[in-house]
Length: 98
Image (cartoon, rainbow, N blue to C red; front, top):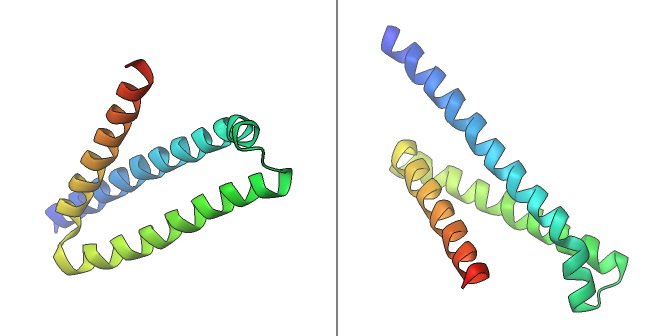
């Protein structure tokens, strides 16, 4: 029973970290929104759609990956997802500096 309790705390910590990453990513969209709006010539309503589409995509992917996690296991899926997120950020940073 002790190992089960430790697994629960690990899962709570991992989910908290993931939520932090998602909030950070959502904040980046909010900060970039004025630039996106200016460069694409979007109206204020269209700019709100950018945020809505982002959040809808995120929600759909969260539901899909939740189901995949049920099927193949959560630990491997979590590790893979965080690795992909980190690599995407690294790639975006390399595009900005290069």
